[in-house]
Image (cartoon, rainbow, N blue to C red; front, side, top):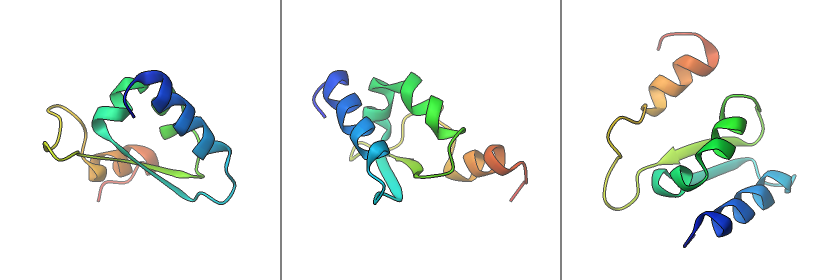
Length: 77
């Protein structure tokens, strides 16, 4: 996505598609639409939303997947 509007349209389209089970989004793009991503990240169980680093590496201060799982299910892995 080149901008937040494009990212939001794509993200919402994926959320509406019943055949999409996992949404993989880069941290950079997720930051463009952070409030929307966070709204769904911890409140819906389907589709699974996973943020990954882009080619420049992880963004500082972002929780790891392990930390997000701990928060989501309340169990320390």
